[in-house]
Length: 501
Ligand SMILES: Nc1nc2c(c(=O)[nH]1)N[C@H]1C(S)=C(S)[C@@H](COP(=O)(O)O)O[C@H]1N2
Ligand SMILES: [Mo]
Image (cartoon, rainbow, N blue to C red; front, side):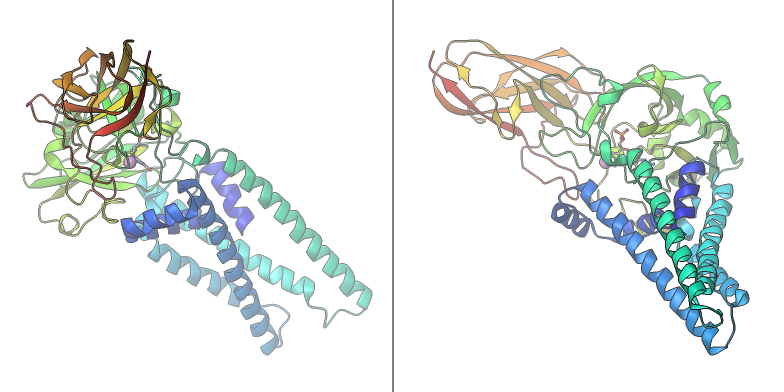
């Protein structure tokens, strides 16, 4: 059964029940429980791995119980085997699992359109649970010795059973290794920061956040994007149809709600794509549309208010810094939603659903992260600023400053979707402030890079602090707030040691 699941996942991107169960359960956890487990496991990757081993163990236990029940049934009926009993069992388990996992059955890691994805998910379960049933019958008949004439034969049969079992374990192990190699473990949580920060983040250094064990590898030709729900004319587009529409190029910064003050889950790129309003015009939204709910190939779903979807800077993007969207950033197409936390910019987008204000999903909280309790207080990014250079280690500069010498401080400032008008630096823990130079200004929806020449005039310890203002002159919030669950606020403070010349 496990071999079948792994093979279907590797060859065709069919979702494994393990992944569907994870995604079904994850939104039901509270954000506090999730972060607590993550910290206990020592990070998101170790937590994901624990989940995988737990799930594999769990499936072995369930299959073993199935085997025991079958053996008990067969011996009670004094039969040699009973295919009917197994077939009914497999069907019942498939139906129950499919019903329990219904919302997640849209998942297809090759990017099949949602309706087909549902059929494929059902087929996957039927085939892999069927494999389990067949293996139980077959191993049982190999291992039952009551009717075999000679003891020698029984020994031989046992040997064959063990050899096949071992061979399958080896095959499963190697498929698991392959899945691990293409898994998110190597890049999920990648951060971008430090003295090397450039205005435009290179694609391979762009920060990365994924809920998945193995990210989708979408087949662009069979992939479709559809818009359904409260619209007059629902429709689906092929990739070529979207690429043929008038496009824009737009520099936009993304920032994850898990961005901690001074950390690196934030990057900036030039995205090319089609403004979402262009697609919305074609489907004619009904008058009382209040929100957009989107779905992705990995079963990810989130929503945001409708007026954000009608802004010309909300894009369906297919290029990043002049290249096709990299796989880990949402190939072939993702949403770019300026001003909202990164979780509202779905990658591997497959479906957009417009919801009327009467939709019950609006009143309950709905969304992969929203259900957990992230962004309860709103999904808009507040003003942020960060010191990137000289090199910072934890809460202090890596190297000491020298009295009378000029040192260049550098960093970024970002306000979501309201530009950056001013950046100020304090070298005395916020007692006095001096304006920094914005030498690489951004747009309303992208970060600005600033620099400041500091010549310390006395030796000792001090705190360097940065704060920014947006285009309305609003000042960055200085009160510290943890990133969990509503996103961080507070100023980036870095301890500096100043030595005498
Ligand atoms: N389909 C899908 N979209 C997704 C996610 C995901 O796991 N699956 N993660 C979200 C989160 S939490 C963030 S912060 C951004 C990260 O985008 P990036 O990895 O391209 O930087 O993608 C968002 N879109
Ligand atoms: Mo995120």
